[in-house]
Length: 513
Image 1 (cartoon, rainbow, N blue to C red):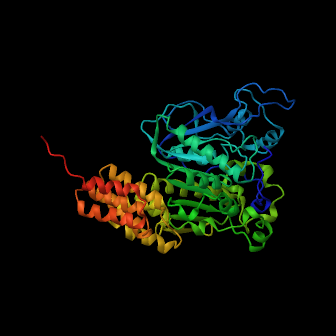
Image 2: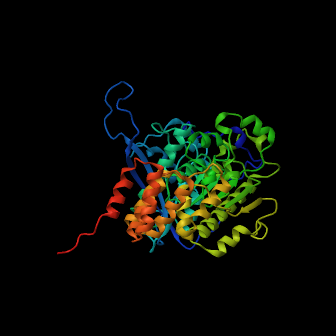
Image 3: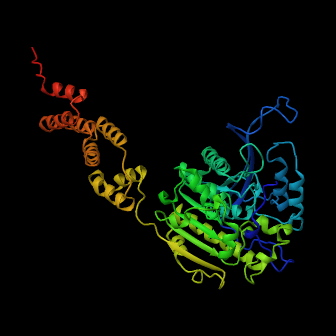
């Protein structure tokens, strides 16, 4: 629980201390159910082989993932969850079935005492609603609990989404580590939960989004860079904005290659002086992820009234968090403004998901309107919609464009990628293998287009001429086959494969007796 710490410059207090959080949005058409599943990722070790005394550690050592699933449910008369019911889950996050609440967690829960009896929307183990629903994985903030945004998760479930979350934990400890290894750990949790979602009877796995608050809004980027099952991202003042150095250090996470739509919420204004004072470390220095996000739609919602912490409903409920941060208050906005702002976060999130997962034209139009046109109070929000432009220069994008436009456009697709990224080049060996596999599968015209592009890029490639010769031989054009085998030998006289292919081509056809 020590890990639930957020940089002071991102925190704020509100003037109206008597105001407690209450979610003001109305539920969608579905009742909401909640299941709590205690499971392990057995592919990863969490606990050490020995205990503090150096003795062998008994019991399960795999990574524990207390998993919360909010889902569209049938109406039931069962008692609704309370804030206190959610808080009780903290005691068994890693000690399944054996409550063990740390002093830090006890202190944190004391901070939400005024709201512990407040009713929420979900009901434990309610019967599933009929049908299958898109999936949203929720990634919590640094070392935080899975239910830090329970109001948003319930809201999304009421609008027809299955929302799944687990706590944010370090690789081998409850506390997260603020480095690339820590981000990758949460990213693996996200992918594990996507795999788990496939086992559920009410999920539509063709549409998957990952939403994350703070640190979770960096881990979801790392997950999307490796997991092609993810179709959209939501970041609630995500750390991808504040820790570009970690993105740079990853070596394999490139926002400029992302083609996914991204909904990004930012906190209220941060001064240049604050940036210089608090963003000078190596992990916070690097190319801006949002500026690089040009190949996927980017919707940026500037929450002018909200501090960083106000992007979590449970943090808004915690009275201790409001103490001592008055100097970071956003202008003269009140705590009530933060409550209203959170409702608009929820509204924009559901419209984003409806637009990109349910392909709802009305929801997409909502995202493109001004806040005033959508009925938001004045001076609360500023929204920018930047449509995707161009395609990233990558092998995956090249393949996708060939599938969309056809292989006869291979040269022009490649040329457009080179224009965007002059040092981009398709690997000679990979292209040759790809063309060969297409030929083996009978896709001769597609294979021809690829290998001709490879020869264009690597004119001295003897192996590419050999492959082109074999393609022509398979299509019955012996003359062109012979010409290309000879070109292969001219490039490399020791090309034994081309020599053998020429012999086969010129061998007399046996006469049937």
